[in-house]
Length: 516
Image (tube, rainbow, N blue to C red):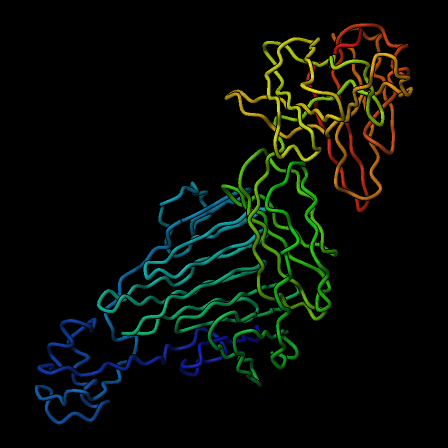
């Protein structure tokens, strides 16, 4: 028989350690003016037959005359109860459910699931259940969990919930009930129970080891031969052989303050300060739904996101002993699309005679570009902003000097995406000697270390097998046009692959590029 470890709120009664323990929990009811045992039985007890037993247990002389303010001790099994369900509040990824007979169930938000339902989650998946008293259960990725006893006490709003966790991890938030403590229990190769408002996590491995991490409140962790009280901010590791360890302080939340609020690159390079208490990190990423759950060895994460939008990154450190700490959360926005265009420009900037700026751009009426012109490279005060729809463009600069220009693509609503890197241009007199510069095709630099940029041009149409893709690599996002002169004129599909340190990888699928 498995050794059981019980984790209970600090006010819990002692539970049996083997088999199906008898429920010895007690509800302490405060007598009000006008109460009598028969009226209380009608309101709160499952049968009036319990009145004589309640009278004896509480040493009451007259069942019709109770002292206001006195305490009645009522065993939980005597209280009115009805079968209860758990309501699906959120689901994402590869998640499945079957009933007690093994028949597959549809997972739908708002649907109720009774006793006997078995849930299974795959990689990056999650299920969030809400119980009738407002308590919640979060089933994380790669978990197997079964709802066992599910009971509701309608006269007090409390619940009795027994859950079997075969493998994986859960997050639990139990709502306090001032009338009657809820009975909430998770059984792994150990059993975890709380009776009052408590937040804790349970992690069960296939080797039948269990960790309990307390985020709020105090719980008691009890094994066959030993027990420990675990306060908020501490956790314990349990095994069948050794029982629960002494409480160990949880790692502090990682510092995510260095992460940018706005990211214009996908994947965004999410890197945070190393935590000396951390051997690894558990990371979850949420958009409109849970997108990913990862165990990372280093304080960095490069997720490939589905598109522009708002995201939330949650990170917690995992200690060398295996306990996970408090979460840090950081919201950020991805605004990477539409991608900025590749630029036909000059390496290091261009010099002009006169004040006419000619531009060769990859713009069409169907794929317009937004041009900005400014005196400063930060474009805090653009002096010109114009939509381009033709491949050739000229504009007269308002006055001589140094100028900067940049381009952005427009989305279907006419809004610009990220702009290209600012390009410098200097105007000179007609008799001035111009410095020679190298014509290049330029992309945008990524904020990563040791980056390498590979441009691949695929001829269109791709059905012509004789026209093979052409690739160039560089440590900078620019490629000399003379290297492309050997290519036949026409349209090409351009792709820029960006590779960086620590396995960073991004691909920019550009629109058609026309080579003369």
